[in-house]
Image: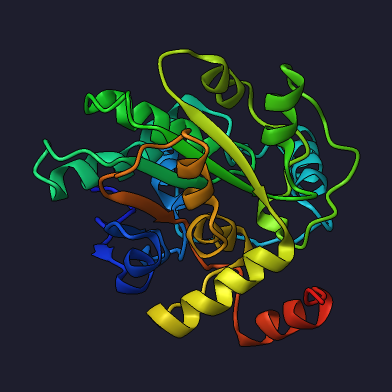
Length: 279
């Protein structure tokens, strides 16, 4: 039986973030995956033993994920292809949950974090994190979910108390661009067993986080990942502590650096041109 497609990624302390927050901040570097993203955990788990060969045809369709997904579903009907969902499948969540298992192993299984920060698009990584925390007995650890304004289907559902579909994706964080969050993620948000705190940042704040992370950590990540990093760089965690929604002292904080597979220097320059700077 072949081994997993993902690797055990580094869990490293960010000195700059720790100094800003006044507590230790660990980065789970999913950007180090061979694919450049956490997604290989779930997709690899779903595909294990189902890949027939290593040849593939890549077809890029649409401006946002929903348009690409519609085309993928059409191809499954017209060409008999197998559909691999990006975030809405139990095997994906099970695969993504290994990120928490690795963190627990790195910390000796006993020293649990004060909170875990994660970006949310369609909700697959959130489901995996929630499942993973429960699996290692850390279900009392709060999850801080981060989205950008204009790609905020999870936050909109939390506020409405029901799943909603966004009319359009207006954020430049296209990798967060699902118009509807998966039902399981919404169910986790409604549970009283685990605290999930849904927060938003602007594209400007996410871009600032990407730039600061590049300067301080020498790692380039995409805007969707910048949303999670902005929890520290834009003071979200500190505000939540001031509001009493997170404890002070917090203990250590884990930020899942979900990836950078959709970014390079040219794309970063384009984002810097598109996203206006605050005046």
